[in-house]
Image 1 (tube, rainbow, N blue to C red):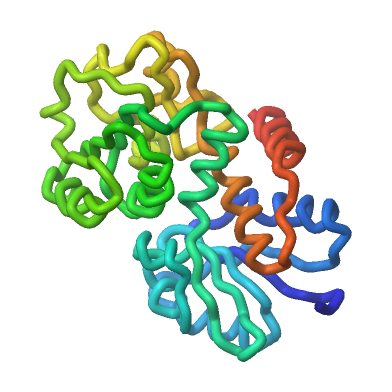
Image 2: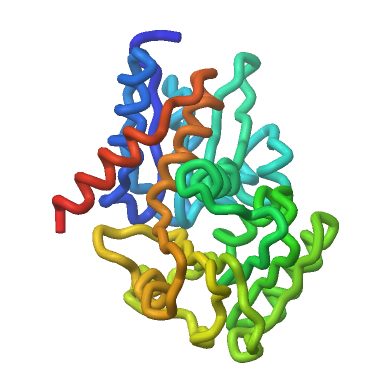
Length: 279
């Protein structure tokens, strides 16, 4: 590895990405030299931009919205978790010149929930809000922790039903519309919708949580998200946003590229401190 190994995150929009800061801290921790920048890629230009990046000496890319499916098709080889997710958030140049595609989102979520927050997943009833790429990307790692039940709720119930069928081999997974959510209670509710980005909240019954139920929003912000506030108002035992997931999936990517996994807690704390100071 050279002193000028080049990495980047491709997305649109990308202005507020924390990835350059996170990976600079990982590199300092590992005492490795690399460059990492955020690149706004025009919609429809992803393949050209990625090819140019690797042709000009780039070693690896993180991929964020809206390009994860395009990255899936761009890769020459795919990890099992990328195949299951149907999307790629990490591209890595291999020694043979082929591009390897991986998806670290689900493992990042599970590490944050189980290791950082010390919440249990095994034998728990989990409600997932949304049926888009964010939920698909985390379903397999969640199911591998053997919850007693997983229910996917979505505005368009057909999308939730398809997702449930696709992952039925991993355990008990059902689907319904938001309106069909009834008196059942859940130990963990994970918001994978984009509602928090626009200050909104998926429609939820007020009695959806067990006495020790937790709420996790895959989005993050300096202030509590609307979903986190809903959890607090409805007696959630604990609530969290997705900042830890962001750092944990980045650590998985760093490991794919550099062969070493960073310690994440000091990075999560530093990014959180900066985020709160920016309010």
